[in-house]
Image (cartoon, rainbow, N blue to C red; front, side):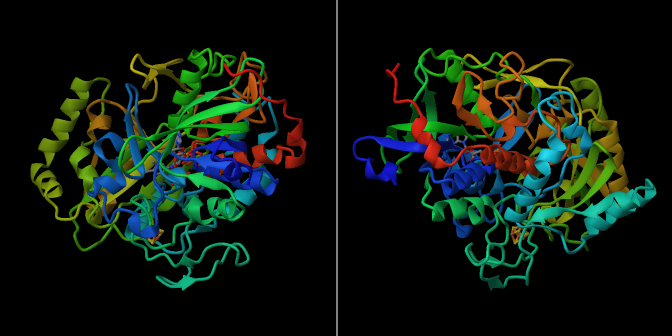
Length: 541
Ligand SMILES: Cc1cc2nc3c(=O)[nH]c(=O)nc-3n(C[C@H](O)[C@H](O)[C@H](O)COP(=O)(O)OP(=O)(O)OC[C@H]3O[C@@H](n4cnc5c(N)ncnc54)[C@H](O)[C@@H]3O)c2cc1C
Ligand code: SF4
């Protein structure tokens, strides 16, 4: 490979992919199949099955707080308007995600924010099919008491036919039994049947979850793609005149200072997710030696799925709610509003520390009063809930999502971190009486109390695992950051292929859509032979 031959003097690749999540892994595989040399740089560590935490109390293996020595798979970022959850590690968000792969409704494809650029529903249809196949998607083949309670709520709402098992990327097979690759004609890795332990969001230690390391990335590495873990990209430069791109990165070393690297590439895919791609591009836009021709739209049109996370904590100890896969079923309340049942595995009670009664209201005082009212209404039950031995066994988490048009802007703060600003309204809100009502209904079915994170109830900030946008598509640099082929306006040799390119609100979990869009973007890249026409390196800035 070009890169490894020259590594002693000068590292050079046809393509460098920044980040190894959904967008990055699809890009790496498809580019390698087209005959390019590809290097993937990933800031997180590489996990073998046995490296994942056994419970989310093992913060070093579960949380991403590198300055505290925690190099796990989940990053929590606190903004003025929301708390963002995102994934880190070789495999990106697929390591920590809840495996659910729904397809968005028509409102996503027809949204005015991007519908003029392509017939998205028609164009993406074959790519959704490929993505589902690659990720090994299938319906959850069993039902849990939480799913049955959601089914009963659906019946009360006359929505029985809208309640379905979730479509997930898990190998069910025979529980605990390892079989040769069942997905890629024997070319892929062996898989082990899911044991229904509920640990998908702490990391699957059993080889059943079809994370990207078992499909796209696995195949890419087989084709010679090099994936450097523990390597954070700190800068991307392109000379004013265009041409060869320089990527600066720091590779962590267990002892001593990080290794600084400068690597050259003809083309770059930015796939660090919103929390990685946006800060990188925003800082490069400010740097006259970075990427000086970026659109002014950078950081605008950031969306969440307007999620609300509530926990129904039951006192009925006869039922173990920690058993099953992370998301068991979904209720479509209407075209753009959905509710899912979510779980953590037995012993994973970290979120108990952040949980209190639900509190609705327009400000911290009314919300605080509402919380207190609910606490005082049944103090003994709340005491028992807080002191229950195994929080995950007695808790059903509800994920409520809806499509909404409102967007936020993310900008660089004075200290270099991202900060959020609202645009066309007050921004996403945690004050959603309809989510509270659904929680209350589930509480009645499960004999439980409805709680939520303090950041949501007291501070009024919703928590989102679906942060999207910031590099929206447009017809020109005046109305978008990338074109409909994912190329950066001003720097067409750099593509953005991750959640930040999502230009409308899917209203459902987005990984399948990110994967389908990445498949479409890579289909448009010509095979390797034509890259020889890339102009030679211009003067280094
Ligand atoms: C707890 C949780 C549960 C979820 N459940 C679901 C679900 O069930 N279904 C669903 O569809 N979605 C789910 N999601 C959301 C899903 O994980 C994300 O939408 C998806 O992973 C985003 O894909 P991406 O391609 O944008 O990038 P990501 O998958 O986020 O990957 C980006 C990668 O780039 C790396 N990176 C960032 N910056 C740099 C840099 N400067 N240098 C090197 N590497 C960098 C990051 O470490 C990361 O590994 C969940 C998310 C969380 C946190
Ligand atoms: S339920 Fe357990 S075994 Fe099944 S995919 Fe999730 S973590 Fe893996």
